[in-house]
Image 1: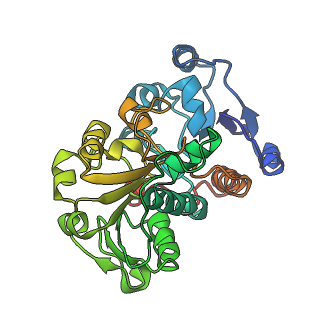
Image 2: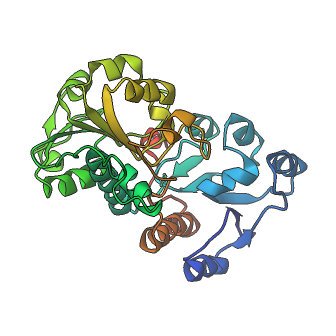
Amino acid sequence: MTIPKVLLLGEIEHAHESWNSLSSFAELITPKSTTRADFLEELKSGQLDGVLVIYRTFASADQTGKFDAEVIKLLPESIKFICHNGAGYDQVDVHACTDRGIKVSNTPTAVDDATADINLFLILGALRGLNTSMVALRQGNWRGNPPPPLGHDPEGKTLGILGMGGIGRNLKKKAEAFSMKVIYHNRNQLSNEQAAGAEYVSFEELLSRSDIISLNLPLNQNTRHIISTREFGMMKKGVVIVNTARGAVMDEDALVKALDSGHVASCGLDVYEDEPKIHPGLVANPQVMLVPHMGTWTIETQTAMEEWNISNVRSVLETGALRNVVPEQKDMK
Ligand SMILES: O=CC(=O)O
């Protein structure tokens, strides 16, 4: 019997023991290439033939580029599973994978607390306008001169959550501890049990009723720039927007214009359209809270994500099936 191969793209940083334990079922290999051009060549050369499952990290895109249709087409016939270490899997062309019969998993749940925590931090920081005073203090200028305008309390404000998956629902619970009223919009209305009292509203109603809008939806072809000029125009003047999902769900140019006009009072961002580049209009705006994609940047959460992803690889090796597949493939045989 030939022993299956597992290809690691990126690093295991924490869950070394679990990763190493896979070597009793499989040959664990890494690519020779460190650039996309070389990776494509390595795929073409047949050197990665025989790989059954790929474990990939978000950062591995620096070496291989995105797992777009070009890469998926070149993957050896033997590859049947791609385990992506991250909740958001927009780096992987799932439709191209489905067409080739390759199943894709991600790491939902594991990221929920840490991402919702930073989401709340950004909501509070943007409401309070904390950035200017923090910068002033470090410049030896106390609160700044003049001091910043007074901020706003979260208590009693309406928080509109766009995308009520694991992170959205986790945020809802946390926001309620700050006495915020939560409304939400989602592809599908949740069961009463899952909604847990959050009011389901249309997309337009969410835009027009919210004091704070939180973007917690995945990036895909239907959600790219789902928030742009038209949508900013439908929001309350003085709205605060927070995004911990993916930068491209919001049109950054349009956001900068809405901030500059004062229609959007502030925003809190963890993600950007073209990371690690940041729109100069955002950097220049002292009101906004900007964090460099730190949503899951904790030891506990990074470890839990790795463990989840490894458990998917293990499940393939032990049972021939993933523990979870991405929603687009839930009916795939
Ligand atoms: O951005 C983080 C993730 O997708 O898990």
